[in-house]
Image 1 (cartoon, helix red, strand yellow):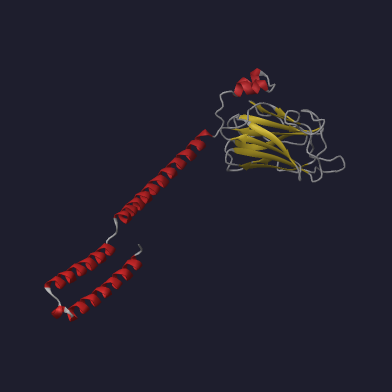
Image 2 (image 1 turned 30 degrees about the horizontal axis):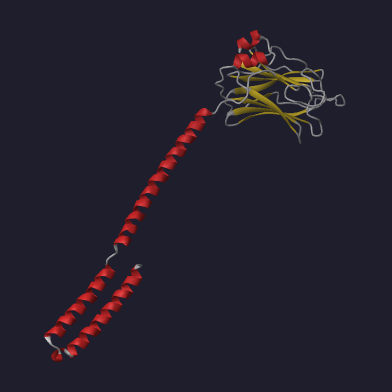
Length: 279
C-alpha cells in the first residue's frame, strides 16, 4: 500500500474512533459494567486496525528486502560486465597482427587492369605522391592526372639495399631507412606532347607521424616507367590496391609485424631465397 493511501486510511479510522468514543460517553451513565467492557473491546479493535495499517505487512517487508537485494545484485552485475568489457578490449588490442605478407606483389598478382604485367610501360601521368600515417600502417599513394587510367603495370617488392644512382632527369639521394620497398609503375612524369615535365615534384616526401616508413623518394623515370622507394625500419607485410576518381595506386605497409613466416612468404611470392634471407 502506498504511503498516501495509508495516511488517508489512518485519518479515517481516527475520526471514526472519536465519534464512537463520543457516543459511548453520552450513554455511559445508562450502561452497565458489561457495556464498558464492550466499549474497551471495540476501541482496542480500532486501535489494532490503525497499528496494523501503519506497519508494513510481512509480504511488503519481503518485497522491500527483495527489491534492495535486486538493486545491489544489478549494480554488482553491471560492475562485473564493465570489467569484463575492458579486459576484452585489452585482449583485442594485444591480438592485433599485420594482416598482409611481405611477398612480392605485381599488377597481375593483385588483379590489376586488363593485360596487366609486372614490367610493362604506361602513359598515365603522375599528379601527386604522398605519405600518410594510420593507426596500424603507413600509406603511400601515387595519384595520376584526372582522366588518365590506373596504370596496368606495377611491381612492388622489398629490397635490402637502397637504390644507387638516379635515372633519367632525377638526381636525388636514396631514402632513409634500413630496408627499402621499391614501387615501380608503368607511368610517366612527362607527356610526349609537353615540352616540360607534367610532374615537377616533390621527389621526396615524408610525414612526422609515420610509424615504420621513413620517407618515399623518386629514384627513377624513363621509358614509360617511374620508380619510387620507401625507406623503412622493418620489412613488414604490405598490401597494394587501386582506387578510381581520381586514379590512384595505394600501398599500405604495416607499422608492426610479428609474423614468424616472413621468409617463407617472401620465397613463396617468387623472390630469390638469398634476397628474402637478407630482409
